[in-house]
Image 1 (cartoon, rainbow, N blue to C red):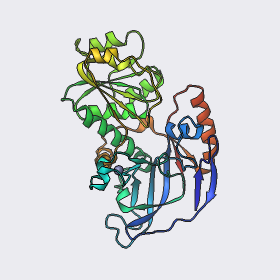
Image 2: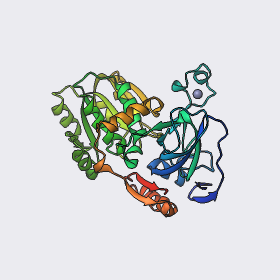
Image 3: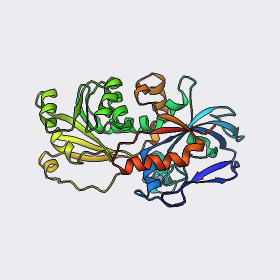
Image 4: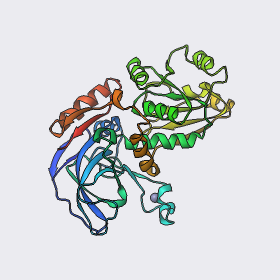
Length: 339
Ligand SMILES: [Zn+2]
């Protein structure tokens, strides 16, 4: 089998390895597709530093090639999404049997090995079976949809609430689509026109450029009340304190994404408005719900469909995309087909 590793920043090497089942509750999966996200590029660049060497890629889909004797929910040829976050097994929550509330979720491609490899061995509990109506490329977004659902749970906003969403990358886009599905009214804000037009093509009706007219525009859309809650997706080009004045007094601002850059903000506007600031970064509980949302076509992925590349292009792809990122461009997710 082949496995790609980032041994140190700015390098991706391919190695041969062997994967065998160690317990009867494990399965061996032929990885078919992985998503290459900006987060993987930051690991490659070294702007985010996991413990190297690390196998990149957090999101993956595959087919079970061999299932251990005690596997109940998967068998040979079951198509699966591989859970991107897993409980650590060691914290107080995990030790008291509440792994779903783990304090130190282990993220693939960051805290544990990722999925840029042709085979992986995983516990059955780390796999979610995929129905035939969800394509491989759509299923690569199960983790993003799960994260967005965790954000929506945290917002706990009544139906009809205006939610300002900062950042129109994959997370911001899918979050707005899901907010509409849950009968909230998202207002999507970005400084990148292209991302806003992709969002409009996905059916998100209120999109605003992040310019000097932003706050008056939000006031107009909300009848002067401003957004009940705001969500700021990390690593966008807007200031992290922009949500404060866009949010109504006593509202909530959720920061989300795959990790956060070090940020300085002036807290005063948030304190004056008595805002609740919180963060959502993982999504262990929502995989099945996310798959159901994809089955029910709750989101339109076509306008943000990732370009698909072959595994042979991986090394060159990391280098070229990371270069675009270094130039300050918004880099879209793309997919690698490992077959
Ligand atoms: Zn834990």
